[in-house]
Amino acid sequence: MATTIQIDDHRKVMLQMIEEWQKSGICKKEFCETHQIAQWKFYYWLKRYNQKENNEPRHFVPVRTGKKKPVQTSGLEIQYPNGVKLVLPAGTGIQVIRAMIGLI
Image 1 (cartoon, rainbow, N blue to C red):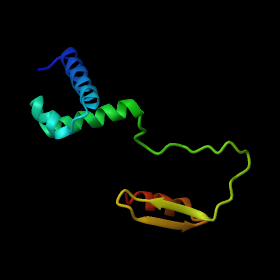
Image 2 (tube, rainbow, N blue to C red):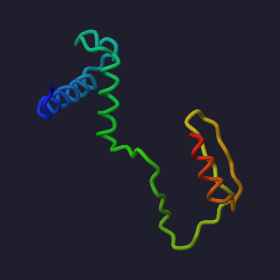
Image 3 (tube, rainbow, N blue to C red):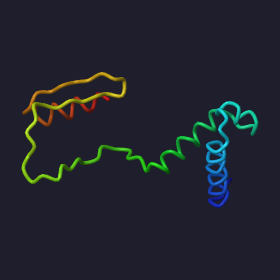
Image 4 (tube, rainbow, N blue to C red):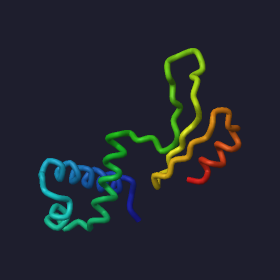
């Protein structure tokens, strides 16, 4: 069974390889072949690296406008990951909005 130290060491090695690839200027496929890394493994660690660098949120985050007054809008637009846009009129109930978000 791998210890926490071994896992942390592996993570550091893989993230360093991602940085090495970025500096190399070669394509991902060639880098993987040269370093004998499975492409799926490379993409897994590239995703982890990008999350670490960008500190990407994994959930919805509140939006603050900096204004004290409520912002008047003509409605709400939801864009799903597949590109479908849903436009709801102003005043749509929270239950309907929750149901639409739940379709993701």
